[in-house]
Length: 197
Image (cartoon, rainbow, N blue to C red):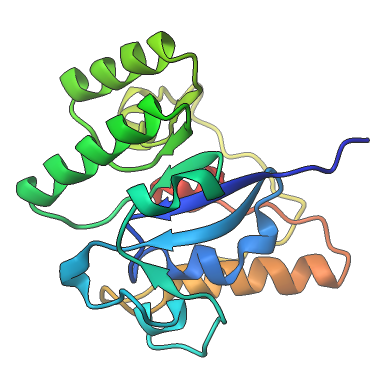
């Protein structure tokens, strides 16, 4: 059995991706070795734990994607709340990574034109481009067959919050990790684009 994991960089790293990084051992195919944050976010040169004001993680955040290209194989493009100017910069950096033969796992919401451009560029440079932000589209197109309620034979835990930024996603990942350590067979369903990681 081959246990070699691809080395991955996360860009743009910030508060929304911090819970995933804290529970990175749940990601089976990728080893996160680099965190890259835009210069204006104030994380460059600081411990990754400062993104969510949690404990130190012993990994420093960089701000230069180009400088670290030789150290990883896959770029995880993190979904985050950004303006159009920063989104254009992120798209340019994705293109640079593709040109340097880096695989892409994109969870950032892209418009159809940009997405198609990225897929074509990836094919041209023979790299994998995996887009994981079509969750909303799948929900809108879902059909419900039948009107009866099925019985559920397993416990279900819902994690919800009354407001934003209350660490619901961190709670989901912590609960998942804790139950797996107790040898429970657990599945987690989340609303964030990178839940499939």
